[in-house]
Every structure is written in structure tokens, then in C-alpha cells.
Image (cartoon, rainbow, N blue to C red):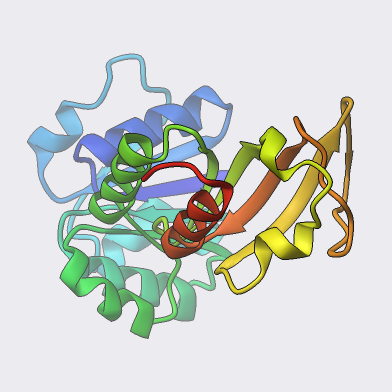
Amino acid sequence: MKLVVVGCGRVGAELAHRFAHRGHEVTVVDHQSHALAAISPDFVGRVVEGHPLSQDTMHRAGMADADGVAVVTDNDTLNAVVAHVCRTVFHVPRLVVRNYDPHRMPLLEAFGLHAVGSIMWGASRLEEMLFNTDIEAVFSAGNGEVELFELVIPASWHGRRLSELMADTEALAAAITRNGRAALPAADGHLESGDLLHVSATTQGIEALRARLGWEA
């Protein structure tokens, strides 16, 4: 794939290195020469110096032929505008944008962009790891608003219905594994001690499940 990384700070440099390591054709764009000079010496790809919104810079970066673009500068407004141009002018099929300031996430959402807020996501994961030691988060969607959790059904819930566990919570059962075999869970199915249950849930939803299972907060 032909990928362009706009912004060569720590996030951009790491992304570029990862993309190149996976064998993609990578171009990194930044208006600061010292930022481009700081990229890993073993990086195999192109670097383009210039302002991201410059038509000349975008053409030199190969936006017209890009399969995907990651816009990861530390300026949310710039990220939104660059991504919008990539989508509407160059018709880039895959776009992802970094959110630097959590208070400006609505700006990126207003453009209809897929945005990842490292501060929001990181805080959510740290909170989860600190408080939910008996339930493991295995996947995080968006910026951590919804996560996929796995939990082991305790003996106190043996023989009770899944619907009883999930009722009136912001959580949905995704899969249940019993004796090494996974299946889509039936709402009226019975639970067994030791079942591995995967649920998608909000923070409020997983807290409700923890309380229902009798685990201390």
C-alpha cells in the first residue's frame, strides 16, 4: 500500500517506521526539517518537507495515489483540514486522524473523521487496568468509549441465565467459550462456572456487571 504520514513527531515517526517495516511504500510529510531529520536512520521511505496544506507539498507526497493517510500533527485544526482535503480533493480511501486536545474532538467528529485521541484512550485504559483487575479488556473501540472484555463466570452464577446477568446494563454478550469451544451466546442460555464470556460494554456497563457478579469495585 502507498501510505502517507502527515506530521513527523513521535507518533508520526513511529507510525512511519511501523508501516515501512510491514513492507508498505511510506512517505512522511512535515514542515520542519529537524523533525524529518530525527526519523529513524533505518527508515526506508520518502520524506517531504513542506506545509501539509500546500498544494505542492500534497502533490509531492503523492496524495493523489495514496491508499491511506494518517494525519498526526499536534494541531487538531490542521489535522481536520488536511484530512478533509485528502478526502474531498484527493479521494483518499482510508483516513485516520490524531486528536491532540480532548476538548477539540468534536471538531474532528464534525468533519466525520475517524479520530484517535491518545490522551482519552490512554486515560481510559489506565483507569480500566487500575480498577478492573478481575475483568480484562482485550479490545478498545474508538477512544475507549466501548471495549471488549473477557471475564470468567464464578461458581455463584452456575446455572443462572445469561439474560439475567446482562439485563439493564450497557453491555452485550459477544461470545461464550466452554470446554475450549466458542459459540455465539443465547440470551436464554444457562451459564456454567468457568465459562469464558466476552462482552462489549461501556465503562458503566462493565461496572454494572462487576457489581452483579459480586466483585468489589
